[in-house]
Image: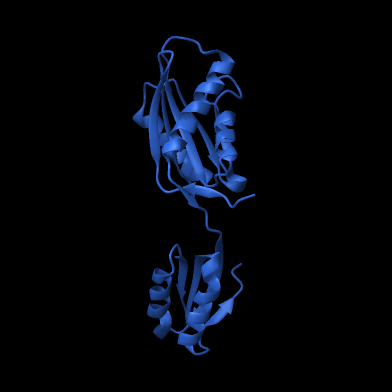
Length: 199
C-alpha cells in the first residue's frame, strides 16, 4: 500500500440534490478534539442547517457522525470515501439544508458520498510524513543553534522546552530528516548535546 496522504489546505464545494443544499468541506485535521471544534464552528455558522455530518480519518482518533440522519447514511459513507482515497489526518464535513424532498437511505448515502468525493477532486493531496519525536539536553549556549536547525528542517517543530541546569528540548521531525539533523547537532555541539529517550 502506498503511504497515506493528507491535504494541503481546506477545500469546499456546494451541491444541490433534489432541492437540498449540501455544503461540503475536506481539510487537514490531526485529532478528534480539533474535528469537534470545527463542527461546533460550522453549527454556529449555519444555524438553519438540518444536519452537520462529519467523518474524521486520523488513526486511532477516527470517527463518523450522522448528526440525526438515518444511521449509516452520512458519516460512515463519508469516512469510506476518505479511506478509499488513502487519506490520513483529514476531516470531511457536510452541512445539509433540507429542501423538503426525502432522498431515502440510498439517496442520502449517494449524496453524502458525492459531496465528499467532489470536494476531494479539487483538493491538493500531500504525502503524509511520519514524525519522529526527539529529546535532547544541551547547554544554554547551543539553544539558538538548535532553534535555527529546527527552522531549516522542513516540517520539524519544537514541542516543548524546559530550562533547568541545561536546556531540555522535545522536538518532532519528519523521519527522513532525523539522521542528518542529529548528525549536524552532534558535530556543532562537539559532544555537548545529550540525546534522551523521547518518552
